[in-house]
Amino acid sequence: MNRTAKAHSYRRQGNVKPKKNWFYLNIAIALSLIGLGVGSLFWLGQQSTGGSSNAADQTAQQANHSPAPDFTLTSLDGAEISLSDYQGQVILVNLWATWCPPCKAEMPTINAFYEAHRDDGFVVLAINSQEGAATVKDFIETNGFTFPVLLDANGEVMDRYHVRALPTSFIIDRNGLIHHIQSGEISAQQLPRIVQPLL
Image 1 (cartoon, helix red, strand yellow):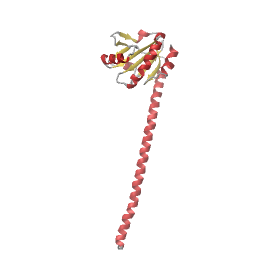
Image 2 (cartoon, rainbow, N blue to C red; image 1 turned 135 degrees about the vertical axis):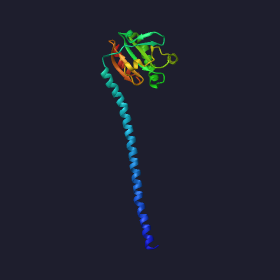
Image 3 (cartoon, helix red, strand yellow; image 1 turned 90 degrees about the horizontal axis):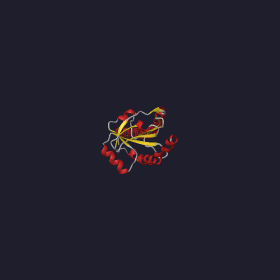
Image 4 (cartoon, rainbow, N blue to C red; image 1 turned 30 degrees about the vertical axis):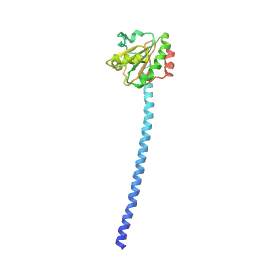
């Protein structure tokens, strides 16, 4: 190999090393960014979960002891029922829908608590959000729920109570004041802790 060929060979080999280094550097940066992105998404997920809970707590604090807006809706039986019909009782107003998995998950808990405490002055008004009466009736009868079910066909109560997600529950004390707002599924542990002191 002559000097010129050696020089070209050297330059070609010399150019390979920086390209390889740059390639590996780019890979390292890309992996770091991916790791950072995944970590950020995980952190944001944790924050949003906690944040929604904190937001619900703040809403509950703001709404604490504010009067519950009255409403009148039609029940599954065709009767006109108003919130004010239950004045002097502890009321759980639960907004839900049959297509909502957390709504369906909490209903056996709500129904069991209702059955156990209805004679103590506790009532549930399960307000279905904008579904047909036949769909709602079939769901309620299939599951054997006994609490009163009302139909919010036009989303009137959702608007009046500023509900943006289902399920949402409002626990109203005997004076007609909102004591607690639950955004999301209410658990078997929460229900007695919140309601029993009001009975």
